[in-house]
Image (cartoon, rainbow, N blue to C red):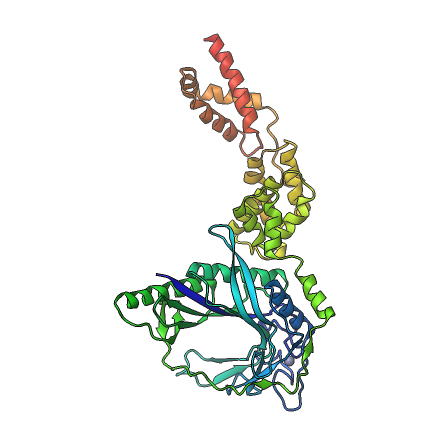
Length: 480
Ligand SMILES: [Zn+2]
């Protein structure tokens, strides 16, 4: 059955440097409670908000990347509601009505479908730049906690609310869209997507002939796909039984793997929106726009296309692009080597795999060896000094565990006398030799394997071993 999905994605601009309207840190994690605060983000009387340049530029860059209509001036709006984590009793956000002007109206997000390797696009209805509220928490569960704790470290952190049109055709596409969006925001330097709680998604989903159901507060892309699959199945079953899917709000219970109705019937609240009188509109002039355009020089799409154009398979190109420190290495090393495919395979498959195997954080720049070292290894293979398999099997594991090591000490000793090794193996493996001489060609592969094994970790070129074996075997054959 056909489903239609729309997403509302909230992403903190964790790398903006400052909160939206004050100079406190945008990355609030790691501070003791209520220590990343000031009169502005505590909403103290008389404190005046001033829009930070970086959060605004990052929001504009995001809007430009989605081909949005950008207004000449941004107007911030107050949204009123009462909650302990909101010290001013209103949130400063953007609203397309009541005189407000959000950073984007009507855009289009292109994302990569990593199943078919095709680019797809989904309409964007709007993007708001707004402040995150603080955080309320309890000792254990809410009923037994002696106190309700409020921590304002997060209060005022810049948040983008990105709203798509309800035109995403499947749960899997929804997941790929959000994954691409997060990578895009990482490349423009706005977000570290791996921080706890840095994004959350509300999704609405409907099946043909049913009302739209909203699923709130999904915290990971994996959960997003699971929650939407669950809903699609649940709603399809209702329609097939001849029932009606009611309009409702549900929440995703990640531990149980199911959505559940929210007990509170959510009313469309009257938030009494009006433009914030403390904040003059932000003129979107040439300087702000050109700064935002400058940020967009590198997007996952432009990188993916550039790397693919070097003859590198989509899977490998994407493996490189989806790990920014890897793509940085690739772009630097690419200028130093001629075999780009070999470089792609080394970075996107084998070195990445080795780092992962050793439990390194692939997204941390310091986990990766410098580009020159990687290029040096590729050049050794290009010059025929070592085989790729030798580098992969004997050098990459050492380089991964010690990324700053020079290459020379990591290189295995080469077998200097292949002939002696071959003689040794032929003497020992008389059965395999007889098999080969009596016409079982496969025995040769076995013998090559034995020679490589006899090298005991020293580098040996299997082609040379095979050549030498064939010479000797021919001699034996001639002798009868
Ligand atoms: Zn502050």
